Every structure is written in C-alpha cells, then in structure tokens.
Image (cartoon, rainbow, N blue to C red; front, top):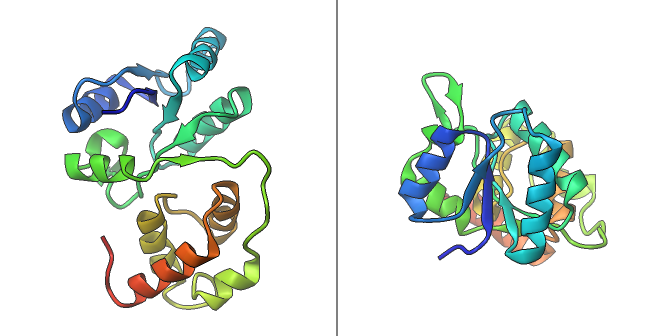
Length: 183
C-alpha cells in the first residue's frame, strides 16, 4: 500500500487513482490553481510521509509538476504516457485504465540529489531515440517501460539523468522494446 500523499490535478483524477490503488491519501491542485497554502501543505507532508506527484501528461500537468518540484525538491514522480491517458482527444489521469494507473505506480521515480550526466545526446542517437523514423515511437515505449513518461528527445534525456536511470537498464529496455517486449 502506498503511504505517501499523492498529488493530482483534479477530483476526477483522485477518484480514478483511488479506484486503482484503494484508500490512499490524495490532494488535488484544482488544475493550475495551486496555491501557496497547498504548496506549504505538500512540503509539510513531504517531510512526514513523502509525496508522489501524478499529474496529467500535458503542458499544464508538467507546469504543475515543475512548480511543486521547485518548492519541494524531494517529491517523487509517477508518469503516464499521453497514449494511455487520452480518451476522445482529452488527456488526463482520469482517462487512463485502472491497470495503467497501477502500472505507472510500479515505477515511482525520485530525483537524484546531484544530477550526474550518465547520458548524452549521442546515447539517444545510438538507441534510435533521435534521428530515426521510429524515434518517437521508441521514446514512447521506452518511457513507458522505464516509468519516465513520453516526451521529446531533450526532455527524455533530462529525465534519464534526473532520475538516475542506469545505462544497463536503459540499454536493456531498448533491446526489449526493439524485440517487441513492451509491457
């Protein structure tokens, strides 16, 4: 059972997460209306029980995540891909299947205290994640497998380094994706 406070954007997201994970502690930001009072509460909870940020895989979700990260650097992160969070053109946590939410929470990420550049842009080229016809598809599948979400190449590289993904797990995941072993 997850003991940390889970931060989502809205009431429907909270409902979907509770359906997937059971009775967990959740607060919602009410979209981009994240107040200083809520940020203070999130900071307090990060010290007491830990916090996991689980926002929509869109621009607003990433902005909310960034605001929380800047205020409370020790939070953990969980990502959904746009593909699994989209329903009839609407992107959001509430649209994801319950098994996708559970799957995302199996890959909780925590930023490393000091970011080491384990990966360089050349690694993305080498892995086919840049400069190839299937680069976007590979990043999507690999981001899902590693639990860092989908993004453009620059953000993908940043997440690999920020979350301390090892070179071994990166290249192993690439091989699995190439062999069709997408989970």
